[in-house]
Image (cartoon, rainbow, N blue to C red; front, side):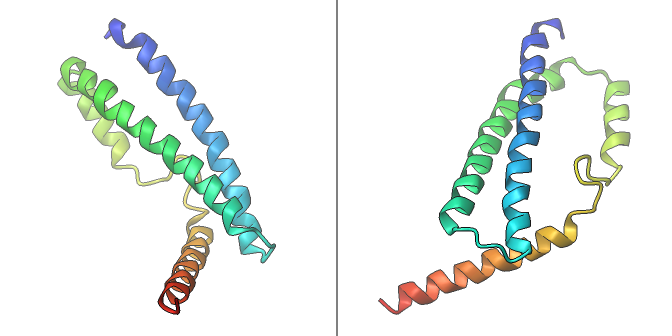
Length: 122
């Protein structure tokens, strides 16, 4: 769909920016994993930036790009897409970061528990 060329270029640029934001998030997570002091504020700022950007990007995809795909793609296009979707390999990490994000999840849950305990003691 030639009318979507600009939107597709914009999405590609956003994907490049996404990589940069993800690397910033990864650096903060890496610091936490090796027990370096990272303030909650720093972590929250990087996480908030990443989540805010992701939500805006996903919304744009869902309201602009995906409807255009539904209107423009042919059955054989969908077959090619389906074949790629069935490949469960993470395109960014290749499955290597699962353990690291598990550690991050544990830390976030610990912080949530600490916050809950602090609130209940008020």
